[in-house]
Length: 203
Image 1 (cartoon, helix red, strand yellow):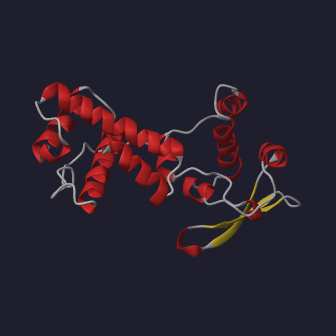
Image 2 (cartoon, rainbow, N blue to C red):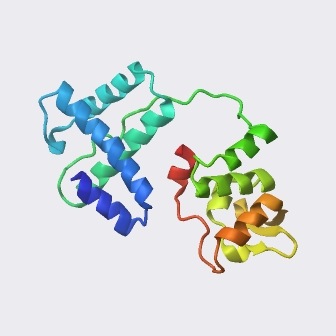
Image 3 (cartoon, rainbow, N blue to C red):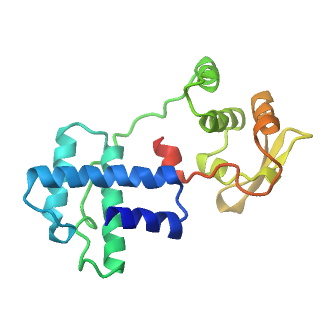
């Protein structure tokens, strides 16, 4: 059922291949846990208590709350899909609570750390481009992911942004972003980054 769900995510939700793979990893983690700690081999036999025990085991292993939340979210999505397909009668992950994230002050990178990240060849180019634009403009990740080539005015090194509440503003970028634009992106009106919010934030 996991493979069918992944195909559905790609075709019906338009998720990127990377996001679909991440869903698969999260779901296979649950399957591995289920088959090694219980005698259940079918998704239809899973109960809410099973999912809660899975969460407890991940917490005991000191996994980050964000990781646990992401995995439970994937399982919840799988069961929602199964319910829509008439394969299950309920979603055992629907009301399962996950650990709350510890509230900490936002961590910021220094200028030298940002420069090192952008120059690091081991980091995918697309990630370095995103870091450069975020660092030079200060825009939100959600705004970054909605950027289109037509939003850029290269003559003034500025970007037209439509933010929260449909408020419009113009931000300015520097030489790093300009260099990437001229060397990487073709002229067009589609989104610059074919990546969804979930993948961008967790990666």
